[in-house]
Image (tube, rainbow, N blue to C red; front, top):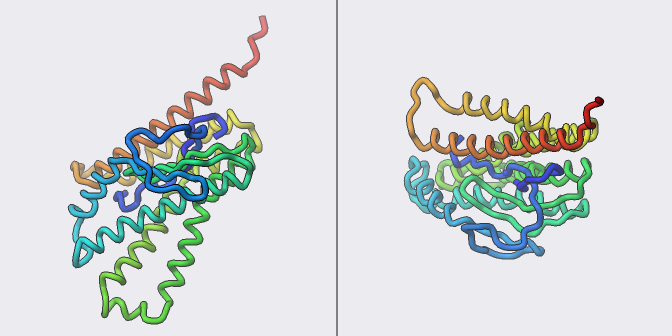
Length: 270
């Protein structure tokens, strides 16, 4: 997810919001509460310390789908590998249209690419769409892997490896579908905003997309939380945290758009 705070602007945590596309100004220092993992193509990749804490609970406390924790760990790392590739998609897409991108942050709910594309709807659209397109490429690669010689026999010879390939495929598809929901600030919501920008301009498009996003977030909460047997299990807690994060960003964008519309409105005729 590129993280966006300006008017131009990655279920079970195994399906983290890997890429809620948004953008922010160029980073001049490392994100708070994080440390740098590595630098690639001029982009610094940081890891938030909370990622380690959440990773522990997701790996150790989740139901055992594999014969050992090593396979749980491999699945969790594969999830964030997909997230990282998605964020590099946003970053490289932004650079292709003449924007800047120099920082990626991995944190418990997925990833954030700090990018700044040029303030044009086409540039915004490509910088956002480039992330999900990475997931599409990964899908075809994983689908092809299922047809490699010997993979079908893994279900009998190495069930852990077979389940890992299957689960990572499901995770990638889940992330792609979730991110493309037309709910701001998810990638789908920001793609909708970019398309609206062509017709109604940058401010109104932000207002409309964030307004629809607020409705969409309510729908997500209603769908993913079982209200009949509400309990503070891991899935409910993470759904609530994700919804709160989305709502906070969407509400901020909605208020920003309203303020910008008031500033640009012509004075009343006296």
